[in-house]
Image (cartoon, rainbow, N blue to C red; front, side, top):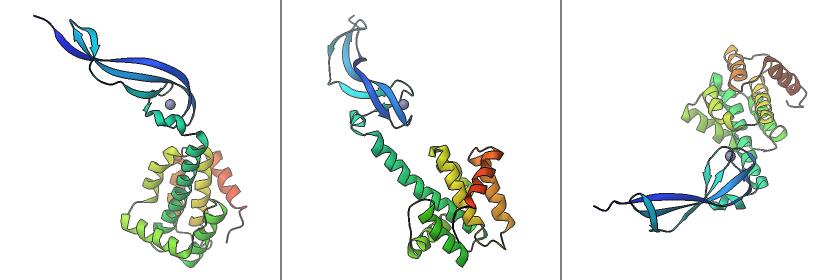
Length: 210
Ligand SMILES: [Zn+2]
């Protein structure tokens, strides 16, 4: 009896450096070729298909299509930065919605902090849309931040916290305990120390926002 089978052989074709989106940094990679072979008595003999090429990060081991080499760091960071801005504004909106109504001072504060803190000006109409989407989805601020903040850098975490603080305290003379509680829970969610939390809040008071 002749033992015939197939197996995939993976070979490294090339090495180099690339920007790994998972690591968020420049890493070394291997360009690998995976190709199915016919085996006779478990020994690969003839290739029976085309080689499939992929890039593998030496650090985190994630695999990418070869096109990842064309994606440069600047482009990737720009996309990440834009996403962060939207997420941070949404977090601030959710904090304002903790007591389920958005007052005029809160609207002013959200419009201004979008512009000043996140460099992403929005108008009343867009803010209204964001509020109604948030209401419909029914996602709580803490649950939202818990998931999206995993991708944020430390600097982004601090900035997002400042946005949430300014939104929560927009009605300075009448801040609900629920909002303060929610704001305080962000310290653990964002994995900040007491000191980092306090400095960020203190710093937020310096922004010239209504
Ligand atoms: Zn990596």
